Amino acid sequence: MSFNWLKNIFSKAFRLVTEILKEVFDIAFKILMAKLQDIATQSITKLATTDLSNEVKRSQAFTEIKTYAIEKMISFNDRDINLIIEVIYNNLKKQGIIK
Image (cartoon, rainbow, N blue to C red):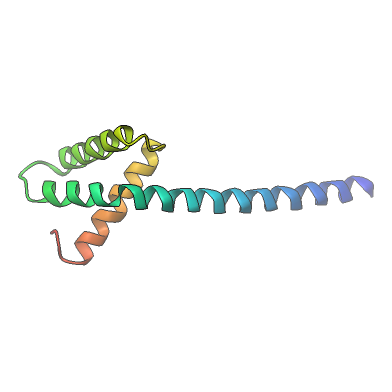
């Protein structure tokens, strides 16, 4: 009986910590997006008009954004920069700014 009670307490605590961490990561990503949105938009827009392959465009945009973030001493990880590229690319495409 007491084992189930303890198991339920740990399960509830784990869910609570998971929810808190998700919220923290969501807020951190929004802050990172706000800091890198301008440079990412400029880079993606500029590269969209080139004849480069999509893979090369993505790689160059990634490098430009990462270099900017390092210069500005902005903490990030590669996954977040890739997500920023994807979000901004899709927004620019929906707005008809790029094809």
